[in-house]
Image (cartoon, rainbow, N blue to C red; front, side, top):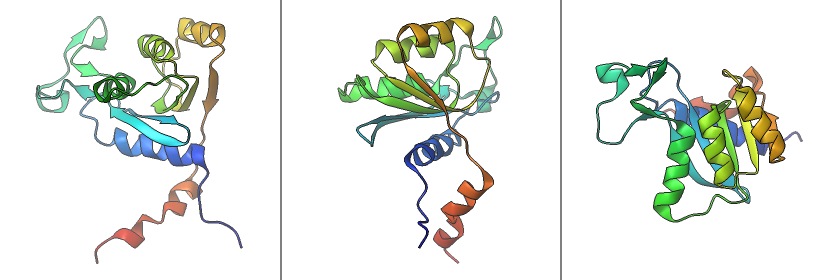
Length: 159
C-alpha cells in the first residue's frame, strides 16, 4: 500500500508556505520555519514590527529599493528563538525564497547548518560565497501539484 504521507522536506516547506500567507508585505510573501532534530522550533513571516502599521494597510516604506518597514521572515523566526531562549545552533531553515544577504549572515551567525528554499529570489553572490565558506548545506525543495493534492484539504472543511 502506497503511503499518503509527504516527505519531511516537503512537509516543512509547506509549513513555510502556509506562514507566508500571513505576510503583510505587498511585494513578496515569505515564510520561514526553523527545524531542529526534526521538530519545528520557530517560525516567521515577513511583515512590519509587531504593533505597528502594516505595509498592506499604509503602503511600503521604500529606501534605496528596499522596504524598511518589513522584518524578513528569517529574521522573525530567529527573533522568536531569541525571545524564547532557544538556540538555533545546528538547526536548519525552510524558507519560501532564497534568503537575502543580510538574512544569510544572520542565519549563519545563529548556527543554522542547512538552508532549504523553494524559489530563487535575487540570489546574492556574496551570500553564496558565505554559504560555501561556512560549508552550509543548501537544498532547493521542489513542490508539485501532486504534493498539494496529497494534502487533501477538502476533508477538513466544515460542510
